Amino acid sequence: MTTSRKLAHWTGHLLATSALFAASTAWSQEVVKIGYSGPLSGGAAQYGKNTLDGMKFAADELNASGFQVDGKKVKFEIVALDDKYNPSETAINFQRLVQEHKTPVVMCPHSGGSFAIQTTNEQMKVLLLSYTSVPQVTSRGNKLTLRIPPEFTTYVQPFLKHAMTKYGKNLAIASADHDYAKAWIAVFKPAWEAAGGKVVAENPMSYNRSTDFYSGVSKALASKPDVLFIGGASEPTGLVAKQARELGFKGGFVIIDQAKMDQMKPIVGGYGPLEGSIGVLPMVDDSSATAKAFTERWLKAHPGRDPSSEISLNYTAVHATALAMKLAGTTTDAAAIRAHLDKAMKALPDAVNPNDLDGVDDKGGSLANTRVAVIEGGKVREIKLRELAK
Image (cartoon, rainbow, N blue to C red; front, side, top):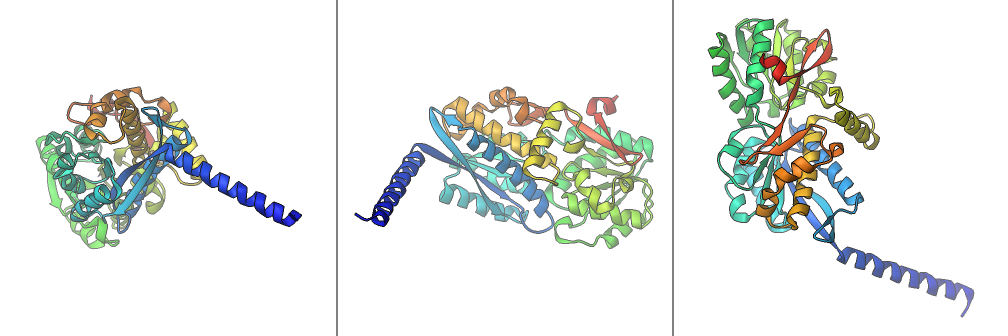
């Protein structure tokens, strides 16, 4: 046999051996698909991408660690479908994810879509990870749901107290018009009035289908409010705040927790135009050691892109779900996985829990000592909810 023929023979042998090894490795490893249905196009696309990328970041870490369940190596794969923030699309996507991809877990980052999934997820024996702080997601009694962020109702009294004390009692509502914003309005409006305030205008807008809010903002400002209640996805919320300032509004903003001030910052031109705002604390401004370590790790993998709370909370949710699978000894039994989520959340290493979630209640809602932020002097000031509640 000539040298060239020997080399070809040896190369072929190596390729065949490598293929056999790769196949045996694949056979010894279980692939667990976690579904995602959320907005990846339209006005809320960046919001959806943030939640999805947080999930993927966790899956990459778990896969690199050689994660095992019941003695078998597990590889996590995130399967994502765009629902354009439309609950009817979410319902279709959910069926596809379960039937075509065999996902035992599906995540949805909006309340309307979560409600749509809850109509069938128990019958289909699929765990829903719901990234929404609407209390009804867990109060309905669905036994296969994890609500990832704490309830938004914890923000209401501190937010209104700060805004009313600093700026005045006249409130104009100029938030988004989707289900989540409506849930916020349904709680915040009567609370504002019960505290002695007056709602002088109520003009929700379609944040997800528009980029020009001058008409809607002008209508709200015509009532001469002291405070504007705004919020939806971060980018359109930033545009609403920017256009309000350009139209001469000098008051404060109450920003619902879906919008993130750090993502609004480049749209409005810094934190200065958000002076007096109150909203959730940006991850990059969180002073805790766990948050700083997570931010550093994220930035190494995604240079120049600050992590939002959507990223960090959904990252933690995937880690908690994986650990619940390990504790339950199964990747497919949704009821068993759900039953171990509280224990898993409490056992998470600090490194994968930058928001300090400290458990899951009996209804499926996550628990945390939430921190918020106000903008003062063009800078973020971190405040614990208990401080504002005094």
